[in-house]
Amino acid sequence: MMSYPVIKSRSNRPYQICNCCVMDTTDEDIIFDLNGVCMRCNEYKERIEPTWNHGKGHEKELEQLTTAIKKSGEGKEYDCILGLSGGLDSSYMLHLAVKEWGLRPYVYHIDAGWNLLVAEENIQKITDKLGVELHIEKLDWEEMREMQLAWFRTGLESLDVPQDHAFIAVIDKLAGKLGIKYILNGYNIATEVYADPASWGKGGGPTGDGTYLKDVIKKYSTKPIKKYSFTNGFKHKFVVPFIHGVKTVTPLNYVSFTKKDMIDTLSREYGYVPYGQKHFEDLITKFLEGYWVPTRFGHDIRRAWLSSLVITGQMSRNDALKILEQPPLSEDESKELFTEVASKLGISEKELKEFHEMPECTEKFRSQEKIYTFGIRLYEKVGLEMRIRK
Ligand SMILES: [Zn+2]
Image (cartoon, rainbow, N blue to C red):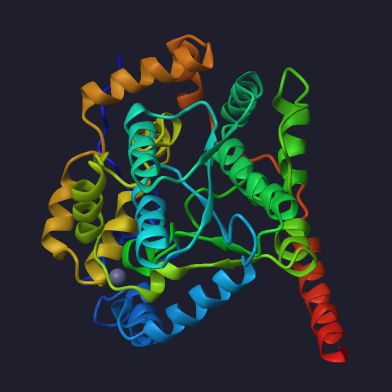
């Protein structure tokens, strides 16, 4: 039914690839210097590497942070919140938080209905062995399914939005409810310093903006969405940190490790099973990043995370190029996923194929992006003034 076409740049620019990493002109906004090195590599070397220093020499900062976290949780059952996806970053952070840093995280997992068995088993193994209680936030599947279909109907590139927004909304909800003052975020320079370029996934609105989600639902959902939790930039960037006083911290940047260290440690200690590509821990993301986006939009998301490994010295540029010669998924795997996703969504493969071939979305949706960027700045100022007055 389908073959896996070669991933080609849609940009009108002549093809060029960075001499240092593997980012190329599939990012329409990429800029190269006279040596053919991209702006990301230059920024990394000037701004990130000197202060980060591959996680080395941050013992004091880590000590201060973990002390503050423990102090904030004195006399309470938990001292921080940690979301566990079953992926490498959050699993490794849970390991460090409990075993190395002596923290007592409230561990939660969001089940949006797309979990793959390998991720569920990893989560079970790690929490069992560490003896931490796992809190599962199960989202209403009928609503998730309907919302996912609504996003397919738009023709937009970013179709992870119903799931990703729910992840932010659940954190905001827990931050307000639990009275815990720290959220451990698994973001780390070592494996994800190069974010997906802004030119990928254009259209739609900010993932954290409930106004945008409600507008898509109004226009493209065939049923009302009632149980799903919405959040917005104001709540996420102002209410949570300044009213609830909950700080989001990224302690993995204070530790020195490589992706290989993470896999080795987790496999040895917990029998963790690596699931291949980054983000391949759930079915819909694996499908979108491994098949949908490369074949429909010409973006190979692996370029960004392979470049992160290359620039931080964990992989040679040649090895990254070799990986990119093969598509993210084989033709058989793609076919299998296609069938599985259509079946989970309750539509025929023909319908899913029609979504794949439909024109790209040019429609504008309501969004509070401008208003809340302005509002957040203003309120942060007010918040600061109040603190000085105290
Ligand atoms: Zn580069």
